[in-house]
Amino acid sequence: MNGITQFPNSSRETFVGVLTGADVKRNIAHVFEAPEGATRLRIRLSFNPHRVAGFNNMITLSAFDPLGFRGAGHRHGCVHEVFLDSLGATPGFVPGPIRAGPWQITLDTHMVMPDAPVAYTLEVAASAEPIPLRPEPTAPLLRPQALVPPTAGPRWFRGDLHAHTVHSDAIWTAADLAAWARAEKLDFVSLTDHNTVSGLAEMLALGGPDLLVLGGMEFTTFWGHALMHGSHDWMDWRTRDGQGMAAIATAVAARGGTFIIAHPRAQGDPHCTGCRWVYDEVFPGPARVVEVWNTAWSSDSHNEDALALAYDWLNAGYRMALTSGTDNHGRDLRQRYGFDHVYAPALTEADILAAVRAGRLYISAGPRLEISARAGGESVMMGDALSPEAGAAEIQIAWADAPLGAQLSLIADGEARQTWAMGESGEARATLGVDDARWCLATLRGTDGQMLALTNPIFLSGFRAR
Image 1 (spheres, rainbow, N blue to C red):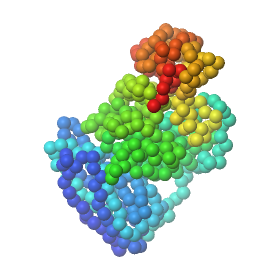
Image 2 (cartoon, rainbow, N blue to C red; image 1 turned 90 degrees about the vertical axis):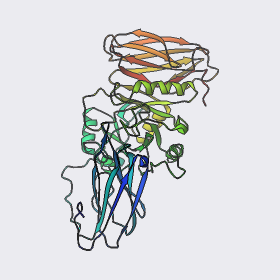
Image 3 (cartoon, rainbow, N blue to C red; image 1 turned 180 degrees about the vertical axis):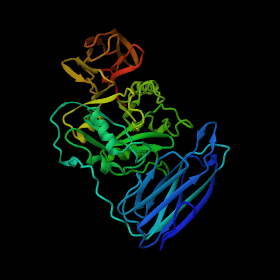
Image 4 (cartoon, helix red, strand yellow; image 1 turned 60 degrees about the vertical axis):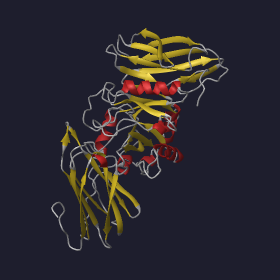
């Protein structure tokens, strides 16, 4: 066996195969029988690194022991090496006993380029070698997050709903992510690694009175990506065996979690495999939160198109909430990210996510931007709805910390109804009759047309939710 060293009392097996374009978007399981007494498992996948028209194949590994999920290595490259034992594991995978019985080592074929067969070798070995004790971490851990009292509210909390670590395809650790979040003066940050929750325990331990850590995962499927927040357990991301994406979204909600469609208009195959959202049954189906600002506004996530898609869903009667996510992998920290500013009663996971689902947030790369409405004695903020009998609405938009020359727009039913050239701070007012619009929000753009801030919608008297 070329890639894995043989140990005494070990069991090993080598699987070889050839993949073609017909094997793309599959979960190909290889079954390995782990013997009694095994203490460590090693896995090595290698395949020939064909490039077709400048694009790479992408084949990743997932592991399941006789009781269930043991990790996912969502990484690029043509060699994947993994170890698991009772005390440690390769990032993305879960430490624990090497249970005797059948293990499934799955090749997830996110991209196999056509017209270039891919030969692969999968080596799996279980051994009964002694497991050396590993030194305790030298860096002190902060207090467990469960012991941190919630911050008094209600007020605005600023944070990030989409970030990664070395437990998937990022280049930085959980400690690096937490340090960056503190340097950015964020109130909350979410770990959403691709198809694994293996880094979540470490990330939660790095939370503290000044930083709430939200538990999550990014469903990195073959036909779109989605964020799961509020559930700290792994969920199967594979849309197969009768489980579609609508069922996954419904299951997240049943767990008390929050399901967010991620970067729905990102460039898809073969540029970014599976990144573009193409699930007909979740368009938006049971989903009611969509990420419209991913990384920098002008990135290849095509945020303008994502926002236009959200407008279409709103016009179709879906009561959507709009979010952002830095999708930070630790590579370029100089980008102008849009952060979520969430109005919540307290800085707790439940309160932040409930406010996100309700649309009580605005997204900003710096300026403050709020929208509210009054009609028929009612007063509402973004995310809220006026009653059908409320009548014409008086809209108020307030902003601060804006660059000179920035342009403020009132968007109603997807169209700019009024636009103001504005100073650093101020207020603007407008009136929308019952027949004028069903929903409205505000956007703030720089002189270059780039988005600086946008609010969630207010639903007016004429809105009829589906």
